[in-house]
Image 1: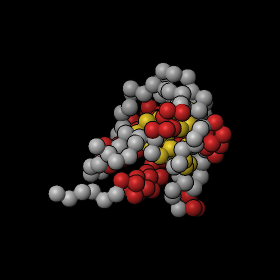
Image 2: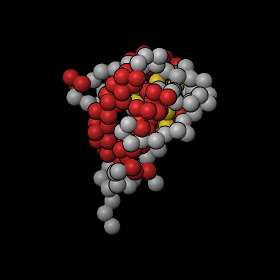
Image 3: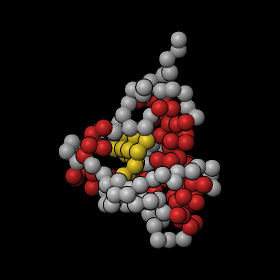
Length: 164
């Protein structure tokens, strides 16, 4: 059982970036030892409707890196999700500002997806929705670059693995 609550990944409609980010982080955590491997990763959108599938371009972008995540159904962000999350990752500053303005209390660990990287690499992840497939690949690749920094942060939250 992990020592921390879920990681919550947030974008606008929860059909492109946040489900891709969640799938990528789940994939990376699956290769880690316990308790990191058991950390739950969920996603939601600040303006999401319930039950929408991930966009086809997002599904294909994940499939190209060996990840299948066809079960996704969009969810609106709730205060309960924020309360339970140990780490909240947003795609843009506007997502963070919206959460900070509406959450009561705001999450303690609220970051941009790439914020824990080297300062020169801390960029927002642009919304590829409605654009060409290449924009989805760019978003995916920007998230992949951030995964090592996210794993390192989560390791500090959980602590070293226990030896028996």
